[in-house]
Image (tube, rainbow, N blue to C red):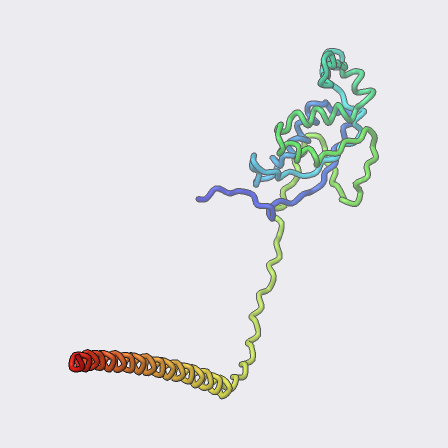
Length: 234
């Protein structure tokens, strides 16, 4: 059996609303983080973002169990020497309630780029109003698991057979044959001219050689006769 890995076409993003009035911060954060990661889906994979969008309202009414409001401290460092600031949660819930809820939820997500992508689907509002009515979010009670409706249906386009193409008319080959014949005749003419030119040059060279031989022979024949006549006279 092959291991299943979720694909982008298998992920459907839904929207849920969590009411934080009277809720404990830790319990609220765990539920929101599990929905953001997609742990409520059977296609969950730790290496993929299969979660849904979460809207938290009434963040100002969040409570902490025990005496944590006075003991729990939120730290922030500016990066400069001596830039560490400490804020008690009793003060933080009054001044920045949305930041306190976001800090608790983001702390339960992976601390990498995947976690930052999951945290981008989180919206926290201190009051009861939000601006995401167009997405039609579904309200969820604390501890309620979102229902699973199965994988999204993908519409497969109907396959249509391509229409057969009309037969193309054959081009006449008469022009091609004449063109080939003309090119072959021209090639033959050029070869004939080259052969005749070679023959004429060969004849000229042979005639020159024969005439040169004849002149040398006659000159050699004339010289001894002149010597003989001079001897007789003496």
